[in-house]
Image (cartoon, rainbow, N blue to C red; front, side, top):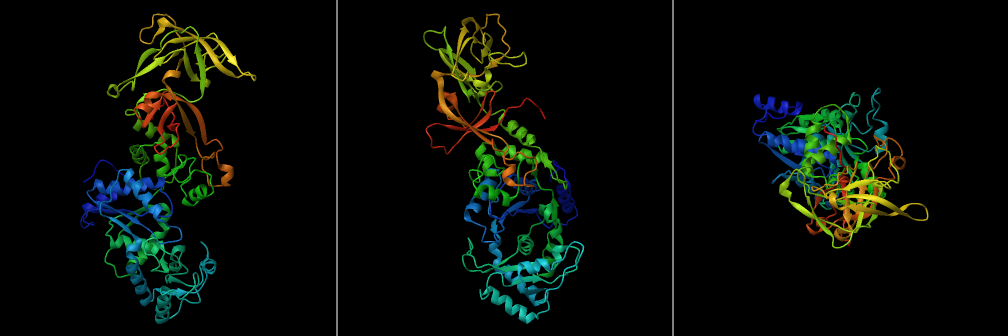
Length: 545
């Protein structure tokens, strides 16, 4: 029995096991709706459902809630399976769909009709909404609420046969139009949809609603603990009502926990779909999105997401998590395993005017704290490149830059002194003229000079042209989705730079690596361009959480 992690859900499971409430092993499920790609909020639910089952020696179903053929696709089904596997979880032989149970669900619906607990209603969706009432006022009964059992059964069977127009009739539960819980005011159980389903084709033209489907599927699969987010807390009485009024001999408890909110991000599939469909982002796997496929493309390792979800924890408190925590988890996962190299993202040419002869071979560790990653060769010669931002003609003592007539150390190389600056017609530096100090070689320095700054660099003979994509928050407000979407988008969320990277990164086909002083980067695996493309995963930080 698990004892490593303690939260209200795991404590509930422990109590149920100790009190023999659970007959057999723990069974959970992750039930995504295949109407979009999963995001990091879903990752929390995936880690929770698969995690607690593993901790308590149980099992988990991956069950697709495919009850709305108008919004579902096999593309979304495939992407969800890929995301769950990538996160490190395995449903084994427990892949199911709500559509697997359509025949049984229909049979249970007929049971409700035959027992007088459901009726066919001819009101339109707008009319049902108008008669539902408010939080302070009761709803009003449908004029079709007192139809006989025989008439309701006949109409419902004609609905299934496809004899009525879409939207003309629905099947509603007969509960209580005066209930303080709006979900119990005769909710819709089935609606007519003349749409082809991605699995059942045209077999059905009526489809069950989520609240009717979900609880029955939980019961049929023997789910011992139905874990869902807090927005379904008010749906729980309906979950219980359905199971109490159909002939099914199992009743899982529904337990709610808080959703994952991440600042500067949206977790609404509706808004994410709009961002994709309207071209604000480059597809569902855009590295700026909080989708799992976007995070994967950005280079975030799965263990970082699992660590993030564990640190966030499971509570009933609604909160907005700082992105700095996710960044910390990403750095923590990459720190020990990512080799180091140097890349110049915005190159400024440097001419070493006192250098002659063949380039000098230098050595640099691929990781300062992990010797197992080996060493690499650098080449120091006449043609070098540094970051444009690392040079200022004059700088204060706080600005660690190379300045005109100033000195700086080139990492793993020599100390250089800037003696001249070549500028364009607008006064912008186009090239630096420097002199290197031969006796200042790193590790063998006898010059006595003490430069205040150390710069990363590449040599013209040992560099490859590359494109760098630097990502920032997609939104410029901490809690987007409250106002106009266009006004909340950050216009500089993606910046592309043409620069240079050490050849070893390409020759050794390094996937993820740290470009010193620039951050952790991943190469686009599907890039077909001649010039390699690198996405920045996360910037560097000296802070320790």
